[in-house]
Length: 134
Image (tube, rainbow, N blue to C red):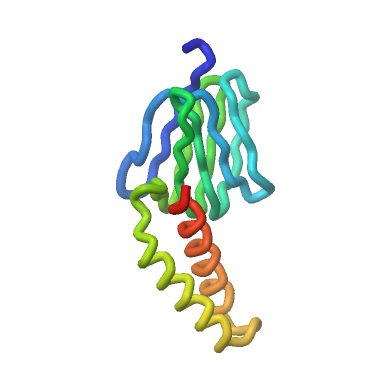
């Protein structure tokens, strides 16, 4: 298809996805953004959230952690800490992580050095649970 673009999702462990897609939606730190073929080139930081793309008119969902996205007119490269496809997420493990983070947050003060780490763990668990349902 002439309107496809190349998408690569890369974690420190492996190339999670590489292929032609119709569009991709990325959770940027300044807000979610979508990319189609012919997009203006730019760099963006990526936040914890849901990354999804459409390939052959089918939407695929990933839960992602922080990283960077490089966009060119015909390619999007995502360098990300973690990326889990929706059907590979262990819902029980994600629920336990959410429960543990909520319990930990209830026990520590907002000015504790661990507070932001635990809050980030809670955000990741919530995103994983949400994406696992898709």
